[in-house]
Amino acid sequence: MGADVSILSRMTRVERRATQSLAIIYALRMLGLFMILPVFALFAEDLPGSTPVLVGLVMGIYGLTQACLQIPFGMLSDRVGRKPVMIGGLVLFAVGSVVAATGESIGVVLLGRALQGAGAIAAVVMALAADLTREEQRTKVMASIGMSIGMSFMIAMVAGPILNQWIGVPGIFGLTAVLAVLGIAVVIWVVPTPKVSRVHRDAQTVPAQLKGAIADSSLLRLDLGIFSLHFVLMSSFLVLPLILKGQFGFAPSDHWQLYLSVLVLSVFLMVPFVILAEKYHQMKKVFVGAVLMIALSQFILFFIHSSFWSLACVLLLFFIAFNLLESVLPSLISKIAPAQSKGTAMGVYSTSQFFGTFLGGLLGGVVHQQFNLHAVFILNACVATVWLIVAFGMKNPRYLSNYLLNVGELDEQHAAHLQVQLTQVRGVAEVVIMLDEGVAYLKVDKRALDLDALLAFSKS
Image (tube, rainbow, N blue to C red; front, side, top):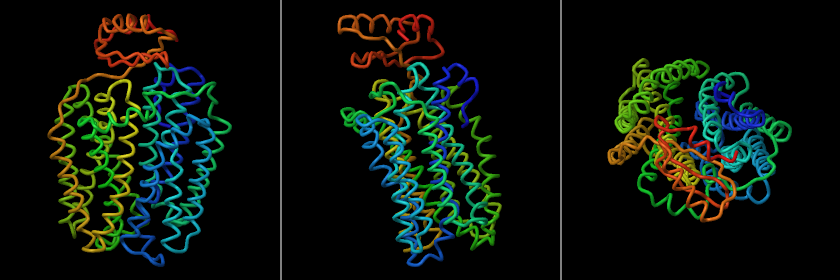
């Protein structure tokens, strides 16, 4: 699912199988969640009891249940096993999809959508991926799974309007249930079963580290960023389909053409900015510029009432910035978080994202109901402006990468000696050795790293 062949070729057969199968499970689930995004607001106009607030709540409620349960489910999987929790989560997701598909009122669909989010297996998928892969391959595995999420979003934005004209929104929910059942089959018959499951600090939330992750102002700045980004995304699609249909006479069956054109172009146009940020170390300028693009796009959308092509151009601007930020925000978390608590930092980050989805739907619905469709864009512009002000305070990050090294069983004396030796390897900036895991968590400068010297200490 979007993983580069060169990445997979350096993995073992089990690691390749684990990466591909877990990426498929993640993509199937996210595809089901995303497909209603561009079509539900139009469908909900005819649902009994529907109001803009309830429509926004239906669209965003999965974010609330996901945010509340993803970390507890990850911790539960440490106790009872990864696969049982994953299967249970996918069953909840399938049940919620069926409830939403058969719902004849907005309240029943709301319940179904909440149950979909309750199948919160994101953290469990990452933990299982860590169980099944060597430390040296972990970053590549997580990147491959992350790429599958981006692909599922793009496919869903196009597939949603196309499927809507064939099977309607209830049919999309029904298809989502089928995708969940396929995911269960993949878990049972395709995903390898790990010999042992344990806590991986690079991939999982460690409760004892939560206070530190929440208190870190640099990480909080990024948590606010992903919150704001998904707030704006969800509230925008609460009104965009209605504007396209009502003000521009753009048939819902043709919406996919706009989304496909904008999304494909935006991916190509964002690449130079990613290169500028990562290769030429201009991360802060690119990041702040992208946040500014989000704020401007929302402000401009408030004033566009008659020109379809102006709307299309502004959407292109928005998605260039959106895709760029979706790419660099996780990279920034990885650069800034201490090597031994990256998993916890990512857990807080993901929770912030889902809360943004929830509040974007809810508050977008409130503003739509109390004012009008276009007022939602002013709400979004305000949220993005606050984010922009906060983003100005960020420092250009150190361009370090996380690296995990299996060092085997050590006592405290040998671990202290090894830590000194690892620190002396060219390109190694930080070293933390966890005795209970037999793993060294490092921050390294890949451009300067003496990999052969580092691997000489590996017990893999």
